[in-house]
Image (cartoon, rainbow, N blue to C red):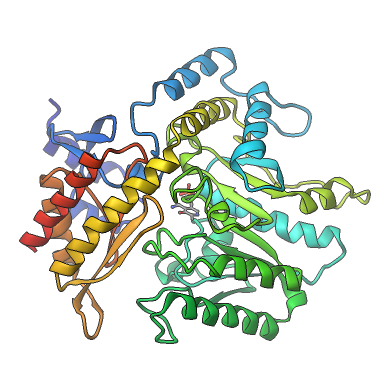
Length: 450
Ligand code: PMP
């Protein structure tokens, strides 16, 4: 067995971690994960736990998905790389595009543009949205609207539409012309409204107000996650996303669904947009498209946008955007195998069933512990507990208490994610009812120790 202290010391001396203070990761060394099997991960000390985080919302099929591993190995032998820039393509990316358009995307999304991950997918959609308006001669439509608490990755465009100060302040100035409206977040919102349906209407009105304040003719697109993920798992009322669609259509604003988390079964539907019955103009995907085994993403594009680009005769629709790894054949092969398994196993159904059990377990924890301010879930396998130090003032919990809960849960068999005051759960979609119990019991032990 590797010496964990030695590795931790080397880790501190040789790398910085995303989303972490460099000094903090030296003081509190991260868990060194060295192996995985099914829905379980093993650390360098040999401790095995259920992965309640599912990698990073991406390992939907667990860590032992042999068809994907085989597809990657086979593709590496056959064609390890070739670009899809103008003039070349590959057989795998053609096959994948058909699968995405025919089965996984909402109706009417008929083209794919490939990326290396979620931030790239968001950047792609933002750029193509601006270009769409320019092709149409609508030069003034350059602004973007989004939700507070939304997360859209780390590129400058994505950071500009992000709705959480942590991902913005130190990197300003960001893209000009990006504005945010309140999220339909029942536990904390400027309207003090806890009824989800009423809150959805208030947020929709805020969107209308912002559009009229900015001028509809200045706005290129509205970007949103169908269920906010990294912001703390915030599911809107079912009327919200359809309402956004209606308002965007009325004002000629494109709707970008950021489905980097919600696509491919996590919500219980095949995508978050389909779950809410909405057809977006762009759908950003990444993460679970390859089950996390290869960095890859795809942006799906609606047919009226496709028409605008493909029927252009002025040259304005030439796409001056793309990545060396757009349509990477190994990523495409991984995605085909992943999506075949995703479909064959109907993981969305298991996500819905296990998600309901997990949500129920978390509600029990919430009822038994005063420090749980809010329990969120009920839409597949994405749930969160929001912790407070005082339920009356809703003051966020301190780092130490939530850290203890996480640590004790880990010792009791489950990896859970802490993000600010939230404990976030997004396990693989193939977990069993017993695995759900393991996670809930581990968390109960964590709360008992806090
Ligand atoms: N959009 C959403 C909704 C995400 O959750 C994430 C990642 N958590 C991203 C974009 C960025 O994806 P990536 O980290 O792959 O760049």
